[in-house]
Image 1 (spheres, rainbow, N blue to C red):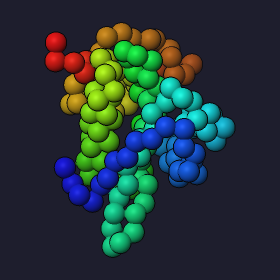
Image 2 (image 1 turned 180 degrees about the horizontal axis):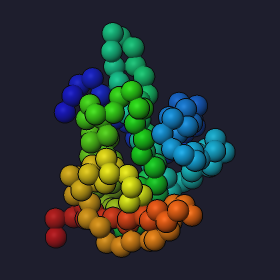
Image 3 (image 1 turned 90 degrees about the vertical axis):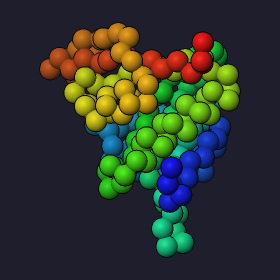
Image 4 (image 1 turned 45 degrees about the vertical axis):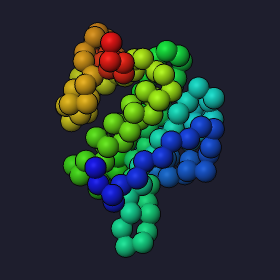
Length: 157
């Protein structure tokens, strides 16, 4: 897509934890705690993916995703892009690269849940090929915000 972005994937590596914590705090209300993020990144079932932005010789982590793999399926637990970098294709690239990596790992289907009020995320997921398969009412808050359960098939059958 764009050579200014680079996606990498890893397991059980806390090297980028502080950058992920900072992105988490800028992206979610309420954010996961540092301890929860560290535990998930260190979980042997987790694939962590980061996206870097390169400019003027500098590289900065601008996004990440956490995906739990339980063969033959996976669940996208978190995906975040720095607010300053949104709208430039980074989320699309990151999600496509995560799905491509999952295919190479023989994952057949990927699931996620998203707030029914998060229209930008819903549009991204549908553009990538996720479809709504279920709905959980009152999932996110006491005001009745529900969660859409979405899935994407990663096989050609």
